[in-house]
Length: 211
Ligand SMILES: NC(=O)c1ccc[n+]([C@@H]2O[C@H](COP(=O)([O-])OP(=O)(O)OC[C@H]3O[C@@H](n4cnc5c(N)ncnc54)[C@H](OP(=O)(O)O)[C@@H]3O)[C@@H](O)[C@H]2O)c1
Image (cartoon, rainbow, N blue to C red; front, side):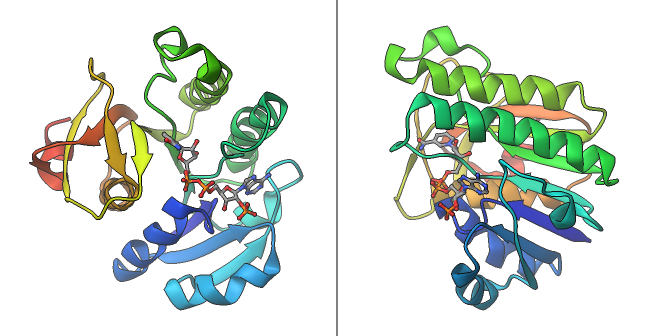
């Protein structure tokens, strides 16, 4: 099974690669900067491909069974870049995935993307952008999983989470645990699905079983 990670050199992407490689998935890491290739290969990526979400990515998608989108413009760019990358870059990748015959798309979204009004004003554009990309994925015809983590931290993994189609309380989750959730999601044949996830007390596998 071939998996493309968009955002492979990001903080979640780098943590995800070893899990997927350990499952014998063929990981293709998508980067904008070729100098990142060697360290991603060392983490377990079988292939590294240069592509930018703001440009044509079909060469990166050819031959892939699953796309995991964990890219993002990050907190240091303005709202325009959020729309260019997190919204339009994601939407374009979904369309190109469909075109190139990818079967499945796993999206790292964000809690509150399905209800931007519930978030703080200064982050609203981000939740709206993520929400629009998620909505495009829902109607794309691709098999999809939308993973909506709470606020990301650099804490060590707990391997336990609280996960549900919609959580009432916002919370934190470590990037390590998000990587575990993504790897476990990729392992499963899930029907179209979406969920919020924060740190909690349920082992990741049991939490996904309960979906
Ligand atoms: N921060 C939070 O609290 C939070 C909460 C919920 C969800 N999320 C979501 O979690 C995901 C990943 O988080 P993270 O901490 O791993 O982010 P990160 O470390 O900032 O990684 C983002 C990655 O996206 C890549 N990227 C940016 N623009 C791109 C483009 N135009 N084309 C291709 N790749 C591009 C970056 O590449 P370069 O290495 O070239 O810069 C980087 O590797 C994002 O989707 C984010 O929206 C974040």
